[in-house]
Length: 114
Length: 110
View 1 (cartoon, rainbow over the protein chains, first blue to last red):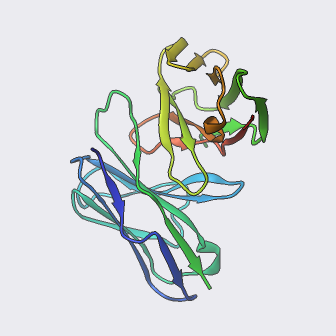
View 2 (view 1 turned 180 degrees about the vertical axis):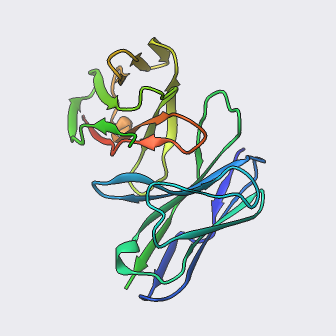
């Protein structure tokens, strides 16, 4: 059974704090993604990675960074959290050359920044 | 800028009827299209994907693709209350992640 695991389901942080969101997949997928989902705005791509130590900006990278030191792990970092980063964060993975292109999602991490 | 447009709804359909969900996309280079279902508080799960013009059927679900008109649709036959969810349309145009629409909220009325 394929699995994408996000380390925290719910987090509450204060403005200015550094936040780490961890994502691990057990499917040996090359591609990993971080999205945020907000009411009325849908899913928006923050960053993605197609290989270890590689990263590419998505549509809304400002205020975020990522790290991919191992193939199975993709971390999203908020260097100095702000209230407008309160959101649901979804990690996903996909195999390169996948016939379907299907994304497999984690359960999500709901972050509240006070 | 790649865009996928959906009517946000809510779309209300009587139980047993056909639910019809539509989306349009802006990037003519998009290769594949996806319908994800998302229950409240849960992550999206894939329902259907389609990459060829025409219809693709899977059980009660039929995906339709018209590349000339740049639209994708999802039909749900014999709608059930458990089909009540938000349905996300997405396109795949390259190596990066899927581009998602904002979703259509579907309500199946018993």
